[in-house]
Image (cartoon, rainbow, N blue to C red):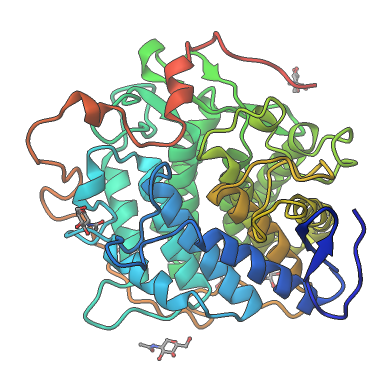
Length: 461
Ligand SMILES: *[C@@H]1O[C@H](CO)[C@@H](O)[C@H](O)[C@H]1NC(C)=O
Ligand SMILES: *[C@@H]1O[C@H](CO)[C@@H](O)[C@H](O)[C@H]1NC(C)=O
Ligand SMILES: *[C@@H]1O[C@H](CO)[C@@H](O)[C@H](O)[C@H]1NC(C)=O
Ligand SMILES: *[C@@H]1O[C@H](CO)[C@@H](O)[C@H](O)[C@H]1NC(C)=O
Ligand SMILES: *[C@@H]1O[C@H](CO)[C@@H](O)[C@H](O)[C@H]1NC(C)=O
Ligand SMILES: *[C@@H]1O[C@H](CO)[C@@H](O)[C@H](O)[C@H]1NC(C)=O
């Protein structure tokens, strides 16, 4: 497939045995990046029907879970911030406010039965994006972004499981859900990142102390393996055998969550050596697994655990979006990482654009960025990941306005006590639980079911 140049046009028709779309991406030309991003964003929103008659604002239809909807709104906040295109802003506002739940804590009754700590965290990340990127504040009589994030933080503090394995968060909030005994990395790392961001945004040491406590717990558990010059990030561990073993499956978003949390704390501590070392070890852990030289020359991101065997579920194709976004944040908060990270975002964006080329729909992208031809997959996750990595290349080194804080222009209204009223920490009290409910809607449910601790692990390198 060849690319024709047509000025600034990012999309062109190629006539090779019928009509085929291609995305033309020139990373030296911001307009080309914006045009490509607009096409991919539009493609992503074709999966959404919450804005249609009968649709529910904020929710992607099945098979997508609630958490991924939350993540998608965060992607659109980033999209607006980097491109200036506010096409979706009104929908983002509506979605984020519609799903807050009666206690303003991202525990909406339709979801609580199957809600995990990680699911709730992804909505909290999105409202933190709103705070830090100065997305429009909700009307004064509505819940405010910062207070919503604080509600999630406060509830998760109260869920700290000191009875087992010396602490940490369980994956699931309720005992009747599969995975209640699993301590997955994304729930714990999610809390860590949220605490780190709240510390920096509000300039409040209490949050930083909680982030540090969580980090120490992960480091003392089989979740984080210190390999001296790098960290190995496992997928989780289980109360069932006192957290003796990890599930060693490797996912981009687990690293990404920890990388960003470390970068926030690095920045907030004015460049402390401790957080620099931790950040560097996470970044060093990425390359052997997710940026293998044999797949795209060493700079193209690959979801190693499910792309090679093409067994990604509906959640997993979106994970690269989060690692991408959080690498961008890291470049901003720890500018010394720019030279390491930037080439990875460039090569990955070119790879992603290739995957948006050759499929018949016009605005859909595949999954394997290291493969020249569209790989036949489409979905919200594929779109979100491509959108994240293409827009990541709009981040200019010098002029970028960083994620703000209350001291640098952030003005979201907070409530340090949000979410802590009696009965609010675990607000499910709706009667009978059926077997169907137990199917669970958390992230990587299937992984847990096949996980026999210690039995499914593998090593890279
Ligand atoms: C909960 O589900 C009901 C029934 O489908 C729907 O009408 C309502 O809008 C949903 N609420 C949220 C917050 O998704
Ligand atoms: C890390 O360094 C220590 C002390 O130098 C050494 O004993 C240990 O084997 C090293 N661990 C790894 C995973 O390389
Ligand atoms: C970072 O530096 C600022 C300005 O010098 C200072 O006010 C602040 O206390 C420092 N923060 C930390 C966590 O040391
Ligand atoms: C913290 O982030 C700001 C904004 O990007 C940046 O200018 C500053 O250099 C960072 N601090 C450190 C210690 O890198
Ligand atoms: C918050 O800042 C925005 C600009 O980012 C401004 O439009 C808005 O009026 C401010 N709100 C308050 C309550 O100060
Ligand atoms: C800092 O955060 C903690 C935890 O939410 C809260 O209890 C405390 O009031 C906050 N401090 C300030 C000065 O806002």
